[in-house]
Length: 177
Image (cartoon, rainbow, N blue to C red):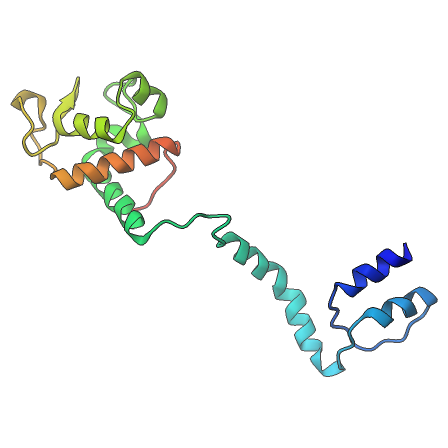
């Protein structure tokens, strides 16, 4: 027990003011502590006050906890979200489907409907399928395509990447602000 106490004390840096030992155990422990002059009490307070939150912040932003995405990937996700909010959210808010409940953008429905890859999502978005109109610039036949504004190929690519990512993550909230 005494060896363990000494070992623990050796590995800690205690910033304490010099104090008198009141017992033999305190005397042994104080031998292992680094003594700091009284004028550094403010530093002691700051370390005790801010060390835990700073450690938590460092862990939260650590690449070990959160693998970094490139700035380009982040921008593409935001651009895809913007296109989704402009062209798709009317029927597919939060990944659902208000027109055809069995054709949501959740993984189970995407797989069942054979649309569980970015390429298939792109194809369905471009040419349409069932009740969903196509949004591609060269979508044909005309009756299968939207009567509203068409999307450029790059926009559909960003949209299909965004939908696949959201589906894989269970459609968490994403802000485009």
